[in-house]
Length: 551
Image (cartoon, rainbow, N blue to C red; front, side, top):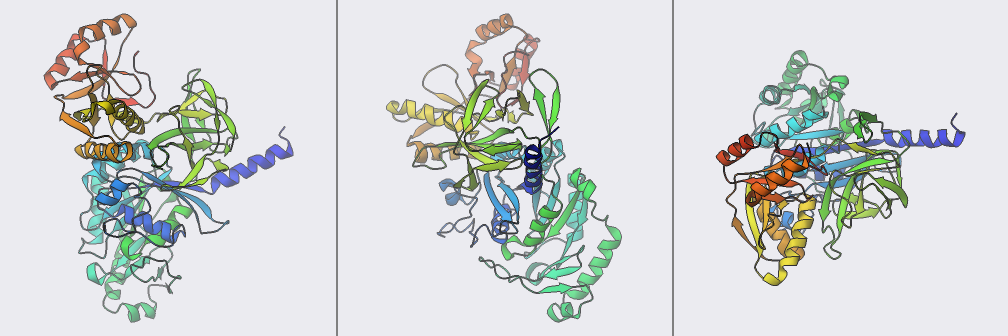
């Protein structure tokens, strides 16, 4: 029987977990994701003034774009974590917001982030509709049945009809839509959004960088105040609302939580319209931290409940040099159960040893605050001196591993060598750290001074070169490697492994975790090698932290 103290502790944990909302913002590049992130922070009271992504001459940049390279290029190249209370103040719920890179060349970072959240906000450009990267990201969400809130952005531009956008989302993304807000006018005549479920309009001053006091609240579609304010748009609004209420499926919380229906909000992030409605929807509908499947070391799997008292969590991201003055490396850990407390001892499952968790931090992009307390759903940063890798699980004793985070086989390859031969060690160190972070994949072919880099897209190479220069003070020469593909290998036994590595020595390399990798110069070579070695498995995907030598 539980003691009163244990019951009180358990109740406090359950209460704190229920107040967490952890979600990612995803989109195709330029749909306005980072602007929406900034406005959510503004309305959430986390910042006093919104930054800008595009204005490179501006001294103010988006909070979530904190890296120097992001400020220069006006794009997001790494995911950011931001924690704040909403409504602001001690009574508010704790929001963990993860902004992800939109550019497809950095999609691996986004895939990793999506394993650490319980919901996602999908931003769609009202003029362009559903775009390629949105389709890919939704597929990743679908693997985990992640609940999706849709925000149709940029309604202040020349855009397509809202009904057409809803139809496209349903037909292309294969997810049912339930409109929750509806635009009043479009383009230059865009006046705001009407909430279909609460039957009201909240007015704001468009486009303010500082949050103003809440504007006028107008109740009811027949309110004469609407005719007064929007004489040209109100007739069309009333017709549309009547039509949409008759034709669309109403919002169903159960279907939303199952990932089969998405509530749709219209608005303009830059003009503040629709932002507060998204925040409220996250509070009201997004799930608190959910149970997670874990593999046990003694075989079998089990669901880890968020309210279980023993602490568990997994590392989904490593970021090097968040503070360039200290050359630090931070491991981002999603807490899955229990409570983090400063100085606690945990079991590092992969290494099979105990480690102390002290001086953990919470984030506002690159700004950090010491954290003495965190529960399931929270993201904490742990100072990493090489002992933590992406995919690592930390527990309070139990040997289990959370479902892995994927590495995808790269499609592009470069050989990197230092311009100055005396900086070979610096180059090696920089690339090792950036490889552990997942910014690029790093392979050691075991020959010469060159290091083989693999990437999903060419922009990854450019960003890595820029970061090596600015963060590690190393200039490198990059030569295209004449390769078609890299494949991770598993062998049925040690004899087969030794024979394969001996016969194919010129094509072998090791990845950042020392896994054997086969480097194919062309498609025919890969096909013939696979036929020649039918007992050897060639993998295009592996899990972080997974040892690949034996099948």
